[in-house]
Image 1 (cartoon, each protein chain N blue to C red):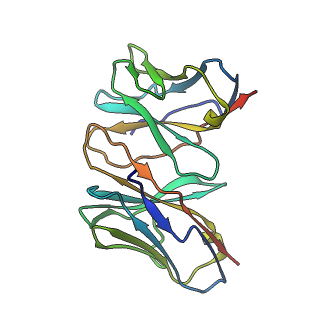
Image 2 (image 1 turned 135 degrees about the vertical axis):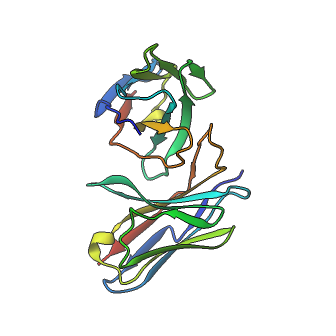
Length: 115
Length: 110
């Protein structure tokens, strides 16, 4: 059963530390999305890639966040330095990029707590 | 993408049909209506989508009004596992991004 895999599932860290979250998209999918969910803001799109190229990262705080796809099987979201306001659940999603379906498959999320 | 309006919460008795409304009065001709749901602590899950015709799959039915300004997601026989937040999203053809609103929190009551 193909699914999006995210690691770590839970992360507790101290302010100022670097945090890296990883995502393995479904094999064959060519679009990858990073979302952040908080109680106050709901689900927000941070960045997305198509064929490993970043297409839109306008939702991402540029000074401390970075997103990359080193290869087709791995997407990373890095926060350096982390701050308490970054505490949230971060979801990765992948899709086939087919325009008329648009179905995205989401991972289980990485719950980040910054103390 | 057009904005959507959903009631913040709804209850439905187990075994009954759950009808979740969505208003998208500013939808344009090439925009699709998508429904996703998010069960507590899980990632969002695709349910169904449509352009102007009614659609049905193994999970739900989507009824879109003729003027396309509103739609209804129908879960025909709701179970406790259908308790979730349901998101109605309007997305243009060619736009790969999903923009989530606040959704409807559906509670299925035993």
